[in-house]
Image (tube, rainbow, N blue to C red; front, side, top):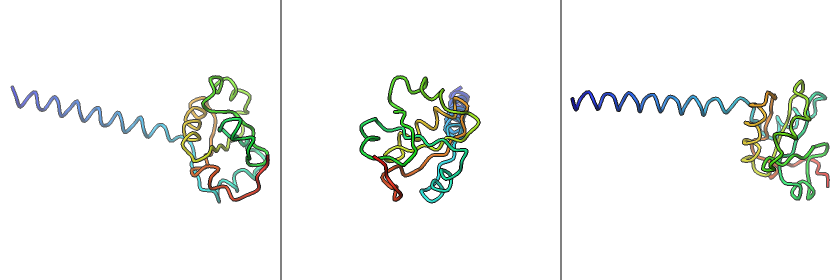
Length: 129
């Protein structure tokens, strides 16, 4: 009996581990790129550039041409509906944490996303205020 119980526990733990791995894998449906590739992507005409930081952070400096929709704002999901699903959405935040969160929300809503993996802190291009 004890052996049977241990086998059941091992089986359930294996199923749980596989479920966790699969759910983590599903959250990477977006393309996370370095600054060099991000610059190439945002230079394309069919890309919407989105800054997901706060309005205050955005006003202190942002990549030229970027729209601002704060990922932590309660109306984030409503505001992203204004984006065109036919075009890629290139997103960034300060360090890359919030943009990954936003990328997951955008891909879940049906958008194709390119995310700057190191955030605005690594940006060495032109800045607009």
